[in-house]
Image (cartoon, rainbow, N blue to C red; front, side, top):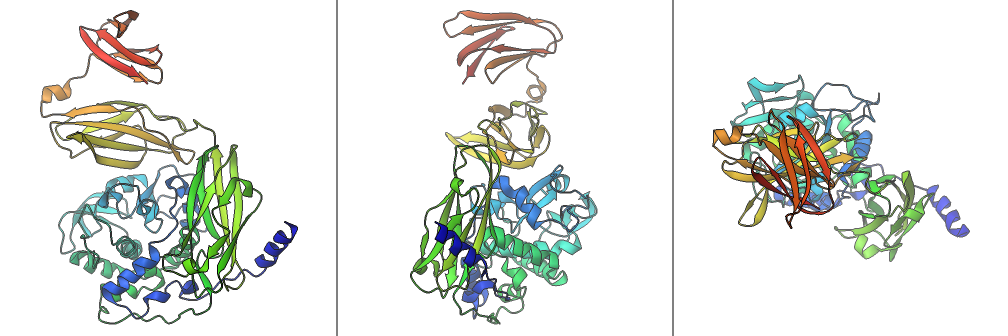
Amino acid sequence: MKKLYSSILFLLLFLSTVVAQNPNGYYNSVSGKKKDALKTALHQIVRNHTRLEYGSLWNVFSQTDKRADGSVWDMYSNIVRYYPSTSGLNREHSLPKSWWGGNENAAYTDINHLYPSDAAANTAKSNLPLGVAGSNTSFNNGVSKVGRNTFPGYTGNVFEPADEYKGDFARTYFYMVTCYQDFTWKYLYMIDNNIYPVLNEWAVNMLLQWHRNDPVSQKEQERNEAVFRIQNNRNPFIDYPILAEHIWGNKMNDAFVLNTVIEDPVLITPTNNTILEFGTVVAGMSRTMELNVRGTNLTGQYLTAVLYGANSNVFSINATRIPVAAANTQEGYNLKVIYLPKEIAESHTASIIIYDGGISGSVMVNISGKSIATGSVVPPFALPATNITATGFKANWEETVGTESYTLEVWTVNNGVAEIVLSQDEILGNSFEVKEIATNVEYSYQVRRWANGMLSEPSNTVQVYVTTDIESQKAVPNILVYQKDNTIVVRNNNHQTEKVEIYNLLGKRLYTSNVKPNASIAVPMTKGIYIVKSLGEVRKVVLK
């Protein structure tokens, strides 16, 4: 063991960083290609990256989107906020997640298109495409605008960023339609379901214009390096802006030629000082992340991976010998790293060093995580909908102290199959207006909350029936009955005292009370099914 640690310390003295425009041979495979072949070659490079946890993103943003004075680099507003506070901020998908539908893939937490955003600007942006807003804007905070598009080719409402960030957004979209070119897209404002060119003609024209007028900034270059350390992939259109011209622009008939091709044995990913951020995990439970180990011109049979550090006992890796034959391929080798904290801790840290394979020196990966107690993130309690109209309603819930934000899911059931119609993240406050939904349909919603970097289990379910019957829409139940934790809650919306009775399924009366006007009672009960009677109405309540 003493000899092993001596070897580790020796290797750390020779950590090497390849400084070149083609970092660590990252782009070796694209030289000589153009148009769709070039785009697909880039897709194969960038698609394999470390998938992050959504709850870890605020820790990540403090490394990728932080100005020199410690303030948040918000491309959506000019409001100055400072880390570690995230009040009034959202984790914004610059290319809306609704465009591909769902949140169970790598794009959902891909920080190449996720940015900290002012919540009001994010809400106004919604899932609109990019564009040039006309003079009649519905939102304008001096940095971001929302209004009718004036750029030729699309006439709907659009989100327009400030001129100084238009190139940033263009290169972000170039990356997204390259990395995820095999997606089936749900909304086709700017994109289409094909491998090439993916972007619609009007979108290509506008994004290329933005790309040319707002060249790559130092901010983008520094962020690209930070993303590489955290996520193990890069945005090629920041490293080589000319790639956009070879794929969509004025150089489509010319092959892209690399000025530097790495021929020595090197690790492409991970790069030195890569960060593996596990976020928050409940003590006693495990979380697994994958570290893509990929190289070029590696020699010998194996790379060696060694886990060490003060808290290395709570981390583990699935292999200490990584086959060079696998690491030399385009896919690389996915090293599994497991975090299993057994006790509550504010911080756990360790490192992995990778060496051999003919590389010069070694590469170090820094691992971190945090553990909290079971039950630390209690689900919120959803309340009945209000403001029900023919095309929408307001979803409500009780506000819980310590909540960072809420996530709302709304669905309907057709022929026994549940269909999600809205999945809204980053809600601040205790309500959300659900708009533009079908009439004469029954909807359901649940709420989750983010706290301590973790997402709670879903709340109770609330049903809503959206109808064109105006009288029905305006009606408020005289007696509102719902379950909360291990209690049955009864609210009297009348202007006079009402009698309430609770029975079990055998008809035995268990409770009776007079509830005052505009007041509530909470009756503790064990798990089971109960009948609540009042004003001649009978309601069934299930305590789970």
